[in-house]
Length: 258
Image (cartoon, rainbow, N blue to C red):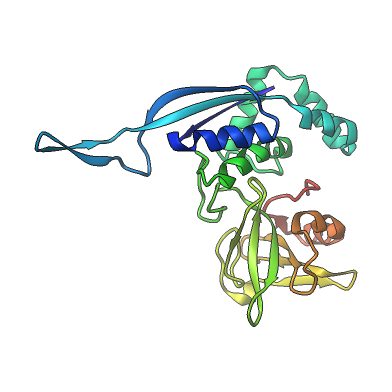
């Protein structure tokens, strides 16, 4: 089991409750709270005098979610993942929650803790789907909705060319980015941003960066709109292995954990 806490606006409570019920979460604990953050409070007028309300009313929700995903990984995952899932399933609840927290605050990436990312994804996707901002660090290079890292890129058809999008590994959302820019370090010199492709995988390519030695796998949906970036990424793992041999490091692992 794992415990998840979130602070939300009161009027969003019914939406969150319904969304959680749809994904099988039945028990929810709700308490009133006050918070100070990006909204910065507001000014009110009382008996002719103005005063600032810094702490705004919020609602704190707490849920406990079963770890069926770990059990599925044990039963059907590749041996290394199954072994790790088996070990995690037997951990003390406090240690289990601590691991999730460490990933949530951005101290680890999916390469270092793939299972925590997988376990947190439904929760994060639910929040962003309801237009609620997850309370976690937001690096400049991360997903604007949740701060997660990009696991894969997609080139989608536009009016006269293909537009580039990054796909978030944590919430599953997408956001548009400059085609000539490294998603990790922000390098914009085209001579330092090589791309590599193979005839074996015509719709996939490696988009590397000579400055930070990072790379992202990019899928071309302008030639085949049926592709699902995160899933079809698995069909070209040979490109990842080649990139690693050349000294590049994927910004964030895909579903295969590479």
